[in-house]
Length: 94
Image 1: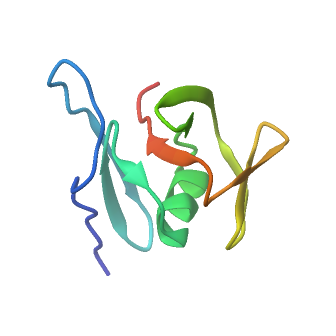
Image 2: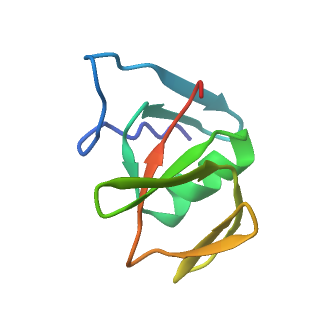
């Protein structure tokens, strides 16, 4: 099965669009700065060890690797981030 996640909603600067492709049971492609929100997005990042940046409103709060995923929070760097209160952004190559 192949799954390509398009960069519908992304935040990037300088017009640079680096991406990653994680091969396994599927192929997933994310663009640097792409917002991630779905369980499968977080699972892909955890499985492929791709960093995720955390924003509180429009301010950078943290960056790290996904440790745990639930319907209400994402655990990174031993901190539980509410999926409703924070924005999560893909940062391949960081």
